[in-house]
Image (tube, rainbow, N blue to C red; front, side, top):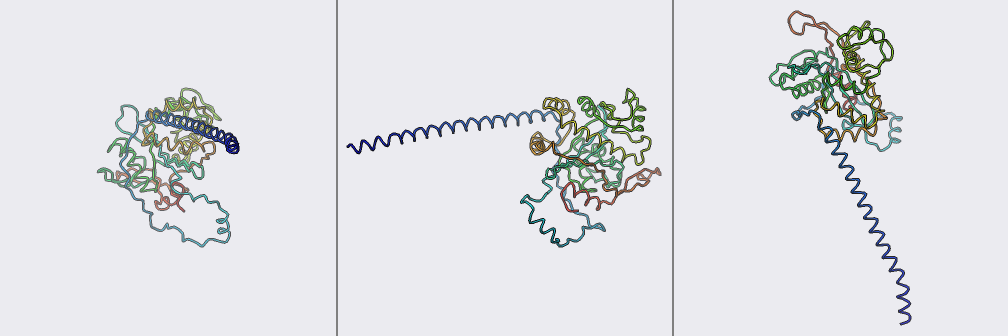
Length: 380
C-alpha cells in the first residue's frame, strides 16, 4: 500500500504536466486558427477591393483565339544548331536549378491610343504600342508599331484584306465589329505579319489620356528647341509659351507632344514620333514608382472608366500579384516595329489611284524571328 501510494504521488506531477501540455496545445491551435481567419479575411478584402475597383473598366470579350502560329520558312531560316563548347557545358553545370525562360514568363499587352471623340462613328488607332513584360528577366520592352508599316491585312468578317498601312487595321476592324472587332482584327494582323501574340488589349481615348496626365499634375520631359517651337505653334492644345529644356507638360500639351511628327530636323517623322512616345511612357512609369497608395488609388478611380480592355478584374488581380513585387526593379527599353532597323521606306501607289504614299516595308519572316525572341522567349 505504501509503495502504491508513493507510486500515485510520483505520477501526479506527471499527469499535471500532461494536462498543462494539452491545454497549451489547445491555446496554440486557437491562436493559429484566429490568425488564419484574419489572413483569409484580409486576402478576401483585398480581392474584393481589386474586383470592385477594376469592374469600373469597360470590358470587352474577344472570341477564343484559334490562330495557330506557324514559323515562316523562306531565305531567313534559323541557323543550324551547334554543339556546345566546353565553356558552355561548364557554365551549365554551375547554373542553378532555375527552369529556363519560357513564353509563360512574358505578358504582352497591346495599348492603343485612339483618336475619335465622343459622338464620332469611326475609330482610328493614332498610337499603337506593345508592352511586353518579362517577369523572368524583370524587363519591360515597349514596342512602338509604325503606322506606315505596309502589312497584309487579314480577310476579317467579309473584308477582302490585302496590302495596306497598319494604321488602317484598327479602323476597318471597328467598322466590322466595334471595339472588339478593332482589337481582334489588329491582333490577327500583328500575328500574321510580325508573329506577335497579344495577351491583353487596352484602348485609351484622347480625352482619357489628357485626364490621366492632368490628374498626375503633368509629366516631366526634356524638350529640344525644335520641339518647343512645334508646341508653341499648336494653339489648339497649347495655351502658353513653352521653353526648351526640362518642362512639366499638362494633359493637352503632352498629347500634342506625343502626336508631334514634323518638328524641325525630324528625318523619318514616324520613327521620331514613336521615340517621343516612349520617352513619355518612361517618364510616366518613373512617376508611378514614387506614388503613394492614396495617390495611386485616386489615379485608378480617375482613369479606369475611360479604359476599354479585354482584361477582367481577375486578370488584373493575377497580373498585379505577379508584377507588383518587382516594380521597383523593373528596367525598360524601347523598340520600334519593324525592329532592328531592318525596314526600309518606299513611295507606293497602295490604293491604285495614282497617288504615291510613304510606306515602311519589311521582311515578315525576319521580323517574326527578331520579335518572338523578345515576346515569346524563342531562340533567334
